[in-house]
Structure formats: C-alpha cells, structure tokens
Length: 172
Image (cartoon, rainbow, N blue to C red; front, side, top):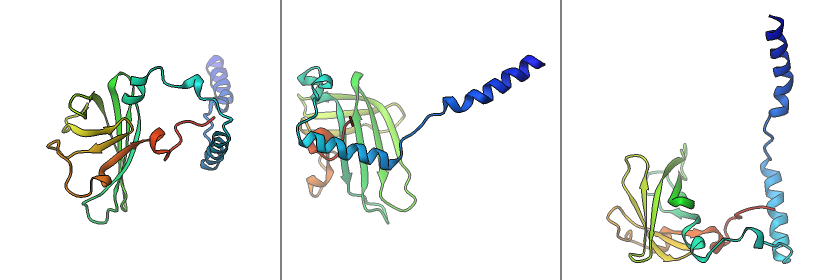
C-alpha cells in the first residue's frame, strides 16, 4: 500500500514538469514581426532548410484561398490546402459565417503536369476534388465535373504561401 501511495505522490509532483507550454498569440505575432524585419534586412539565411530539389517545391506547400460561399449568411470560405510529402494532403475548410465549423479532409493527391491538374482523393467516402494548375504557386478550384466554376475565376484561386507572401511559412 505504501508503494502505491509513494508512486501516486511522486506522479502528482512530477505532473507539472511535463506540462506543454504553448505560446500566446501575442508572442507568435511578435516573432513573426521580428522575422519579417530580419528578412527585409537580408539578415536571414534560409539555405539550411531550402527544398532539396526543384520538383519538391512544385509539389509541396501550403495553398490559401478565400472562395465565394453560396450559403445564406456566409461571406466566403477560407480554404487551406497542405500538399505534403508522400502525396498526402490536408484540406481545412472554414466558412465565414455565424456558428462556423471547420471541416478537415485528409487523403492522397496526384499532381499531373500532363493534364494540368491536382486530383485530391479523400480517405473518407467523399467526392474527388480537382484543381487546375495555373503555375507552380497558384491553383484554381474546379467544380465537381472538373470544369472552372462559372464567374470570376480569380475568386477561386489558391495561392501557395511562399509565392503569395500572404503567410509566414516558418518563424526563426
């Protein structure tokens, strides 16, 4: 009995030492601002974690877009598409409306320069998604039939973060 009690007491005392310390939004914003300033001054060296090849840059990355929304009380849909190594993807969809709920989709992707498309195949039973390749830093979201959505095509673009300069990929 005393061994169990000693084990519990030691466990309780060590518990605070294993706590994960997350940075606050303010701390992350401060780091991002410092990083931008250093980058503007040319004081950052990115050669240590640059891509290993030309093709790796084309096929991987995080693409952001703000697409139109047809639902009532919805101002748009924020989409974040991460194309990862081994042809895995993560798609995060967040409608800009009251009581919004993020949805996540994981699966495999195929990047075909021959057809000029990226095909997303979900791990769940969901329809495949297609995006047209405008260039290595820009994708155009297509409808279910693989055709451009009617209307202004610029409203359906997803920009790779390092090409659009709209997000920090990493912070030093």
